[in-house]
Every structure is written in structure tokens, then in C-alpha cells.
Length: 320
Image 1 (tube, one colour):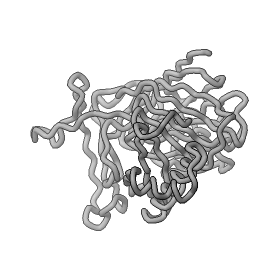
Image 2: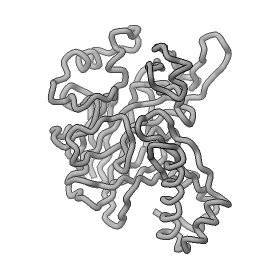
Image 3: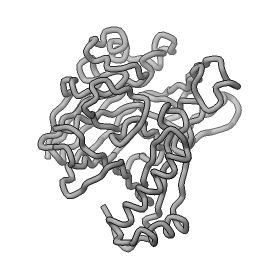
């Protein structure tokens, strides 16, 4: 196994979406670990205070080549990472070993026409929020005494498909803009592979986010992480599954929350059938008794997200 360092530069990041036509930023073998840098705030860098900027980030914002600009999404992603021997039908296991803010400041933005209440909050607004990395909180609003614990995670973890210009905004079976705050350090995400090499990209760091992400953004933060990529040829999945230290998580993405809940529930039933050897009816009952369903996000148009959480403490053994 090899350890890699993947810096964020004009040749290793891409903007706005996913594409199988992008030149890989890194080629790894299954089981390799990677220290990865990500930046957030491409479209607000010219409004940012000095502490939000590094020379490398400014270079990316001012000199990113046109071929690294994929689609119209706002996200700057590091990758893609090509995994040797990955083939369609495989599963890519992404182990999130460490996640930490790259800078002691993040931002939150209200975008006109977006969010859960676009009519009530129709004016765009941009706030830069200091992060106390020593005491691990952000005070918001400043001087209010309200201290938000920092629980950093990557909002986007995804693989490429045969769509050469897929926007970074919606999540899907490929992962993408999942925005699931449970995917913190110590968790694992399992993604279906659609193309040779998987072509995995990562970014959209969040220092803190509530379920729903109702005003469109979290505390958007440039983030560093250490990940391990492992091929799972013993698994077949049609939708992402995650595992934290405490829970198994299934996900559903759809145009409405009702549809997203239905998919998250069906995916949990399928998980319990396959890995716990339950009948469909017993799995359905268990979901009603022991699975907690949460709104992941309501703003990544056109796909809203719901995730179901099943405590591992009630399971007889590890099931992935």
C-alpha cells in the first residue's frame, strides 16, 4: 500500500461538476491512502478577507484552465482520482480517516432563488465566519455567545459517470453532493462504480451544518483530509451506503422529500435483506421499530435527500 499527497492546484482541481473526460489528478491502487487538499469559495474569493485566501487558492481562482471547468455548479473539487482495476459494477469504499479545516475561516451564502424559503429570503447575502480551531467552535452571530461545535465533513464525495458534464449540485447513485453531516472522520462511504478507474473526486468542505442545510450553504470551508480508497469486488450496490462508528446509513435522493424517504427506506430494506438475511416484511417492520430517518438536505435542486440511520448496537455483527 502506498501513501500519496494530493495538493490542490490548477492541474488537480476541477470546477462545477464531474466528467470522465478530465485527466486524472492521481492514479492509485486499491488500499492506498491519500492526504488531500480541497478549497471552497471559488465564486466569492474576490470578496473574501485576507485570512480566507492563500496564494495557491488565488492562483486556482485566476488561472484554472478551461478544460478543468466542467459544468455550472459552484463547487471546486479535487480529483479525479483513478483507482487501478476499478470496473463498472464494483464498489469503491472511501474510508474517511481524518478531516480538518484548512483555514480558520469559512463562509455562508444565501443565493437568490435558492434555499428552503426563497420567497421570504430573496436577497443574496454573504457572511465570512471565523473558526476557533483551538476550542473547536464557531460563534454565530459574532458576539452572541452562540457557539456552534465544529464537526467537519466533505459535502461532495463522488465518482464519474458517462455524463461528460454532470453538474456538481445534485447527489445521486454516484454520490456527489450528498451533504450528509454524519460522514465525519472515522466513517466509510460505499459508492457504486460506473466507469473504469471510478474517477473519484472530493470537496465542498463543511465545518458545521444542520440537517436540511436550509439556506443552501453550511459553514463552507477549505478542508484537508486523509482518505483510503479500497475496491470492493465482493459487493454490488445501486445506491450509496455509509457506516459510522455507531450507525449504518442508507440514502435516498429524489425531486421531493416523500420520494427521497421512500428510496432511503427501500434501500434500508434491501440492505437488511442482503446483509442481515431478513425477509422483506421483517425488514420493513424493523425499519419502523429501529431506523431513524433524517432530512439530509432540501436545497440541492433537483434532488432532495433523506437518510436512514440504523444503530449498529442492535446488530449481531458487522455487515459490510
